[in-house]
Image 1 (cartoon, rainbow, N blue to C red):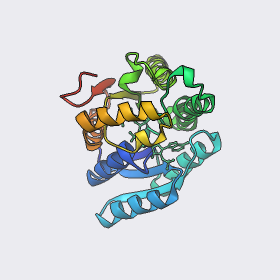
Image 2 (cartoon, rainbow, N blue to C red; image 1 turned 30 degrees about the vertical axis):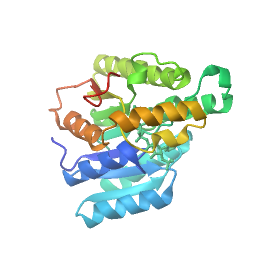
Image 3 (cartoon, rainbow, N blue to C red; image 1 turned 60 degrees about the vertical axis):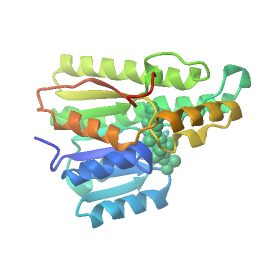
Image 4 (tube, helix red, strand yellow; image 1 turned 180 degrees about the vertical axis):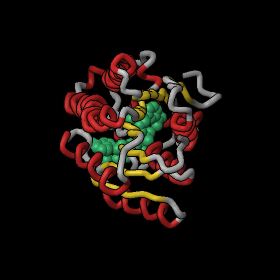
Length: 248
Ligand code: NDP
């Protein structure tokens, strides 16, 4: 089965990569369920998709709350009858050096970037096991593949996502549940991500990098569509995607 008629939940769908992916998948005939905290944005994007002839619904969701993730899966089933894929993409990146001691931001990143992904997996796994099919896709980062000064905690959350996804893939194969996994490792993509940076020097450096190299989030959406579009017996597991000009 290709993208058409697949039911896809997308977290972090109120901007950036999630928004671009929701729009692209809907334009290819998927039924998309959008999730994030900002309702005004979710409402606007959902309307845009529906007005363009697509099928979409949304639910205000805080991925750090297990019950919100569960309600999202319930909504997908109520509205569209099943869940074929979940794109666990919500994330924040308030980078800073350790010496700045922004401990609250460290904890927020751990809660959203790691526990948010785990909450999504926990919410959808029973359905996928019962169906004996499903697709878990996550947005890690190039910071989950190599180390960058000033990116210690964010990088750690993204390394964690890589580990969770690799073991999920192996266990799903062992258990015969036919669950596919794909992990994305983007470099500089122009979205709202830098808005969470409160450390002035870090923001300055990141802004300069993104202004020089950043590419648009639809580049990542294309890769999500590619992963979903593969035959059910084929798992395309990892993608590193970034600007041709960026040395990463
Ligand atoms: P954006 O800031 O544009 O999007 C982040 C999304 O996450 C928003 O929709 C935001 O919505 C949502 N979000 C944040 N916290 C929560 C929460 N607690 N519950 C639900 N949703 C939440 O940035 P991107 O599109 O770039 O980010 C998407 C993913 O891509 C992130 O995981 C990021 O780490 C990753 N990434 C991005 C790169 C880039 O260069 N842009 C590079 C590598 C990885 P809301 O505030 O409405 O809740």
